[in-house]
Length: 113
Image (tube, rainbow, N blue to C red; front, side):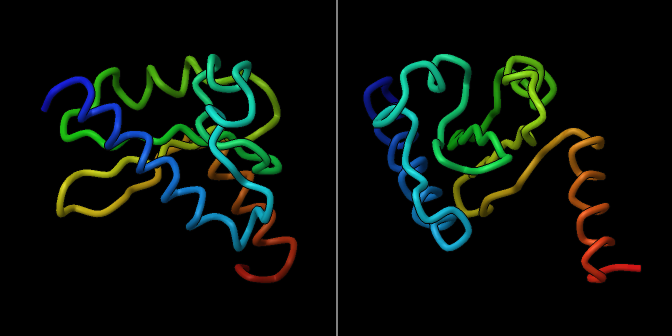
């Protein structure tokens, strides 16, 4: 796929993920449209309270999940990768510590024991 096509595909995926997450984050938009500072830090979606999202729409992910997460902001927000492959759907990746934060919250509200 050419560079321009890949870039267009990636931008379209960011917009689609913003649309999907709008029920949880009503003000969500792409960082490209809102904040160069966030975009430069590897965060693709803005106004996602407590979460940083990096969106990838590629068949072979490079750099790896570990490297992408390492490069994302080192703050209290949960760094999350949304990765789409053709005809495979979207998967979510995050550090175990961040996943455990979500589990603790679910436990506090009684959703899990």
